[in-house]
Amino acid sequence: MMNWPAFALVLLVSVGVCTIPSPASSASSPDTTQAAVRDLRVGERYRGGVRIRSPFVGVTFVVPKDWHALLPAGSVVFLDSSVTTGLGTVHLLTDVTEETVRAQLSEPQSIEAGFVLHPVGSIQAEGQKFIGQYAAGDDVGVTVALLGPSRNAVIYQFVGRKTERDIYQRLADELAASTQFMNEQDGPVLRAWYERLTGMMLTPQLDSRVAPSEGSTAIHLCSDGRFIRTIRLQSVPGRAADGEDGGADHETGTWLIKVQEGKAGLILTESTGRIDQHEVLHQGDQFLLDGQAASVTVSSSCL
Image 1 (cartoon, rainbow, N blue to C red):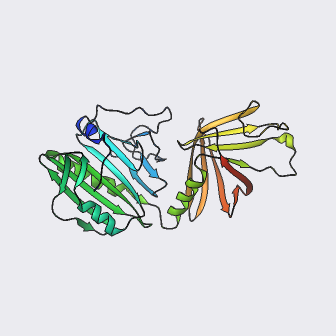
Image 2 (cartoon, one colour; image 1 turned 135 degrees about the vertical axis):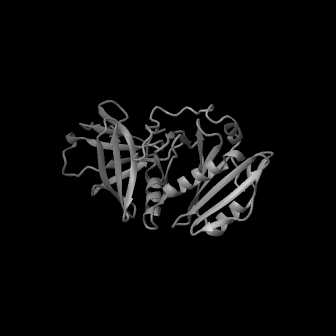
Image 3 (tube, rainbow, N blue to C red; image 1 turned 180 degrees about the vertical axis):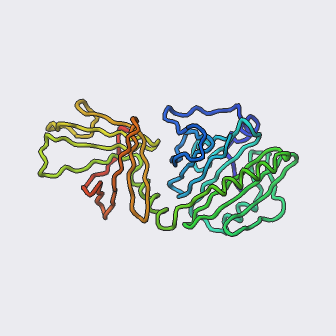
């Protein structure tokens, strides 16, 4: 049974009225069908047309037009609209099989204590796509689940009045059609890199042949998607070159990891719009940034 967080019913009743403030660096952007991929972050709000990526699940999808997506916490994304009544959710799953997903869809769907939608008919299967229908009084639910290549899956679900059933089915199908899973090789690699670098400070180690006066750089990769790059132009004996005291220049922006054919790249988009791309490697206990040895430690700037 899919249990929804306690505030789900409140959102269902007041869709388009209840909003949750997002940080200043929110991923909201004008509606566009060609929007760049944005990593899913807790507390950020995404408008229709934005393609969202879940690095830890290895899947992307596009938010439907006239809808907004929000990840309050955990692995359930909420969808709401000021145009269409009802509530949508996106369940991001790892370490699952076809049998576990089918079993989840075959159970009553608990929206809130005392509000349960019951399955109507059997689950329809179309390859790796599974469709479930649910009802309770004047309310209905439509669910579309997709299986990925790496024991991962995504489940799209819309709940609301039965008069809107066709709209919910169209929305769920639209989300399913927009879904892209990373391949079996790259998905686990992407997830591993986010686990290694999120909340950490990446510091390239200076070559012993480089004069200390040339300074050092540290890149703080925060869990909310921000990066802080500190550049100390001149090292001072007895001071750590982490940019947390005076004498360092700071650059800020957003970061993400891209993986292709098993190779990972760190993408830094500065607040000015400038984009830096760096190759990252992990060999045993050693990290390499653009071929240069680098240390990875917990960042105090991201706390």
